[in-house]
Length: 250
Image (tube, rainbow, N blue to C red; front, side):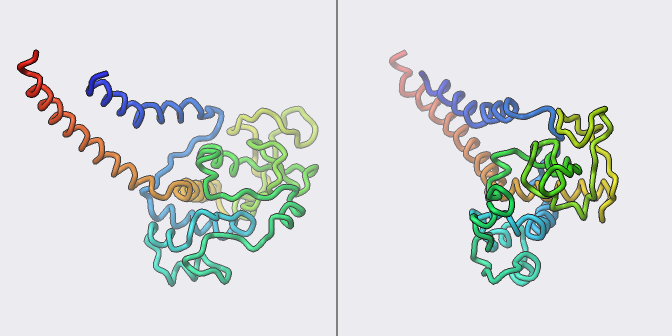
């Protein structure tokens, strides 16, 4: 294998294969949202939604408050006032006071840590999941979900979205069935936000969850560009040296 073949394989490993894997594992049935980690205001709003609606039950033990402040350009006093509601310090991780044993008794299962949930589930799955809660009186919290059957999680964003019900499908009760998201649910009790506003809130929240799963992603891409640029220049120089060294032999 010569140097050129090795270089081509390196480029394929870095760029092509990861893209193929993402495409191969994507679910075309899910609703899609565009993640924009460069939108700092969206990430700030998403962080606020997370600490207000998610962090009471879900920890984020791989993220520290001061990292959020540094990455999202949030001053320390604003961070303390708007994102820290306990006795935690800005250098602490985003843990919760609820014990795992208690949470298992409350919900039947221990709510997962959300530090890397976006990397585990994917942004489209999270976006769709948060959109598709509906009333199901047979469930302990009175709601079910089209994306995750018999979910143990209550609809924590109900006051923003309101309540949905399944569109009449000829079946009795709130029965889980293979979803077609655009036509399966209808809003029966409006929330504090309009449909468009709630959608924007979910995009901000999922955007933040994606950021939290890999805070250095944007920097990594910039570094990767310069690494590839450096390797390209090195390849040209090395190839020219190789031709010069082997000129008399060939």
